[in-house]
Image: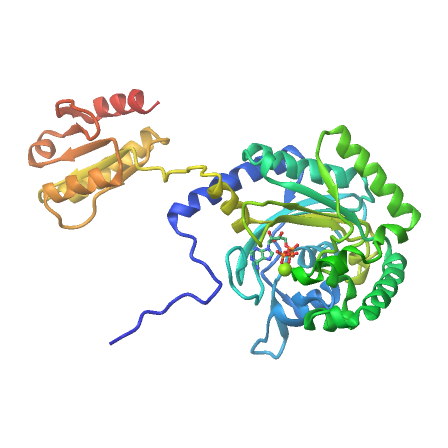
Amino acid sequence: MTHGISAIRGMNDILPEEVVYWQFIEQQLRALFASYGYIEIRPPLLERTEVFSRSIGVATDIVAKEMYTFSDRNGENLTLRPEGTAGCVRAVIEHHLAYKKACRFWMMGPMFRYERPQKGRYRQFYQVGVEALGLPGPDIDAELIFMSQRLWRQLGLSDDLVLQLNSLGDSATREKYREVLKNYFITHYDQLDEDSKKRLETNPLRILDSKNRELETLIQDAPKITQFLDETSRQNLKTLEALLTEARIRFVLNSRLVRGLDYYDGMVFEWETQLLGAQGAVCGGGRYNGLVECLGGESIPAVGFAIGMERLVEVLKAKQTMFPICPPDVYIVRVGERGGEEGLLLAEYLRDELPFLKVLSYMGEGGFKQQLRQADKSGARIALILGETEIASGKVSLKFLREEKPQQIFSKEEIKTILMSYFS
Ligand code: ATP
Ligand code: MG
């Protein structure tokens, strides 16, 4: 017995019934980005491994255990991108894009992380990212949040997503805070789980992000980063809060929000939903002022966010927003010796004359009845029939598939006129 080949675990086929959701969101996104003056950039999916290890940080979960890394045939150490920002910044530096003027980019595509597959967490998943380089904020920070909020509004999700906000301060702040936090957890070492004990050395801030409920009180009582913020970060956060309040965007200050990538500094945020269970983060972002320099460019400030597309689609589905697949308008049924050829030519004629029309042609050897059954199944509203008589007289029969109306025979020009008024 032969076995079929299945997809790799955690890598999904996005099937046609689902693609309609994706296309709807993508359409909204393109229009939204254009209205804010953001332009698209498309870095490759594969980069040198150091692009990610240097920027995301070697002690993070992503770099330590989640990357798809391999040597290519030339012995180069390469990685499938686990996120988009690092590659975008690499491109910006390589092509000198952001030194003379500020840049506002968006991008969309698959990311790869070797995570434990579960609902809302996959090994290939799609992100839509936005990156603004060369602007110190907090005005641009507010713009990014306004933009994301506008998207939720357009998708009818305003009430389903909550904005969490924090600041991670400058690098001196985080260094100081890391020590304070480490000391705090050391004094409660016995209460920590194995994961957190490991993080104590490598990345103590990530303990704050633990999903272990038994650590809840311990984490709640930990010193807060807010107490250690440098003056600029404190001021910027305050201004951003005021801008959000002006714009009537609700937010929750969450001093435990640390994000999983080392390159973040200053303001960070996440949009969360209750509709998806444990994987509730739909969009995350923040400032990464040190990243351009860290990857070898001149120091320029930057900020960005990424939306998880699968989770956004799930939220729309949870809200029972329906997007039916668009059926064809017209289905061409043809019989007889010259039917196949005439059918294809009729379809081309209609596409020339009525570019908005969706035309599906029957292909293959099936009989008249079988072809009509296919026409019905396709969801088309009209079947155009080319039988022996029609072909001999250069005409076409028109049959309404969803209405009780008599079938009638017309010239091609008449068919064009009828379809034009019927489908406009
Ligand atoms: P999480 O806390 O859920 O692991 P994260 O902090 O690792 O998320 P980011 O790296 O900030 O996520 O990515 C931004 C967004 O991409 C997330 O908010 C989420 O919506 C989505 N995302 C991240 N990892 C995955 C994954 N493995 N599968 C599906 N979506 C993901
Ligand atoms: Mg993660």
